[in-house]
Amino acid sequence: MIRPYSFAFLIVAFLIIFISPLFTADLVATYEVEPFYVIENNSTGYEQGDYRVAFKLGTITINSSGNPTNLKKLTLDRNNNVRKEEYTFKTTEKVGGENSFAAELVAKITYANGTNVVHIKDTKGIKLLEKKDNPYPIFIEFFMVIESENLNSSHFQGVGFQFSGNQSIGWFQLTFESKSKSDPKYIFPSDSGAFQPFFNTIYNVGSGNYINPVDITRHLVFEILQLENEKSINLIDAIGTFKAKVGTAKITVEGNYSPNIGVSFTGEHGSPNGNFRLKHKEVESYIPYSLFFGNPPLQVESGPFMTWGQIVLGENLKNLHVGNIDHQLAAASIAGEYSETITVTITPVDSNPISP
Image 1 (tube, rainbow, N blue to C red):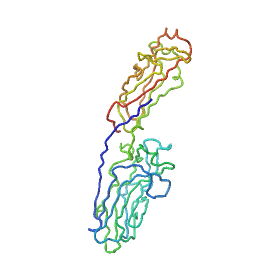
Image 2: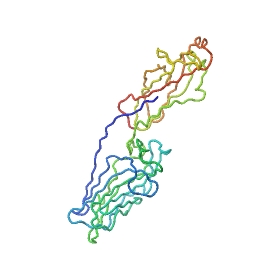
Image 3: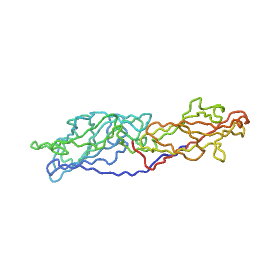
Image 4: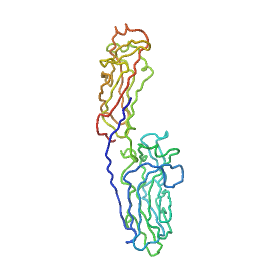
């Protein structure tokens, strides 16, 4: 039996809005970054490939005040230090047997009379909209669409995403041209040719930051490993001070974790005084024994919690031994096969998890 391993935590969202004039006093553009990046079903209308889920990065809003400015061309450029077309995300756990998913950057442009969806796969001169009379307001939503055949957003609940390696979608700038030939080009976020980041946080593998809320109950796995020669022992190997190894306790940790874990071992046939007992397969005959946990082995009681300390990311291993079997009692017991089922319960000791 394994108790759920969970923590309550407070998330504080900061809404970031960038404002820049695009065309004197007539056009104003704002960029609003999403406060949380959550995997949702793909609703962008992007139909290339099997991109069934997505998350939104942010939205540019372009409004016109006063005399509307007719649009000739709306163009997006990115800085050169970016991956141009396809990206790869690594996940905190396998979904559908995979922990690596291809993704693409797209823009969904909604204006007065229609919608465009554009794959942003180049760095320069990406046309978002052109030849539109009074299309305002214009909304440009940036999405990462993720290839996920036969999967939807429900399959990714609690699963964190990170960019593989040093991949980056980079920074962008927006160029506006009106239908009047005398009008100059105007650059967002400013007329100095500056670039605006799609988001301000690094989400690459190893950064400790995750796209999509990570459910930390999924990131601590406990199991007992037993070699074939550990599943069945000769009682003579556990007589008195001799100890026979019967397995290895293993905790595998990913993501947030607690450095100390409470562990309890409860024997199926334990006696009233808390000792462990082996039971004969066919009759009511018992042989008391002691259970030892750790490296070096320390004797544990049936029931009470003890602390497994200094938990680290990755694998944590401790050996399990049995011993202290009374030779005379064992010799006087009915011959045959004896066994015991031990239930292991784990629980966090610390109230505050640690992030890698």
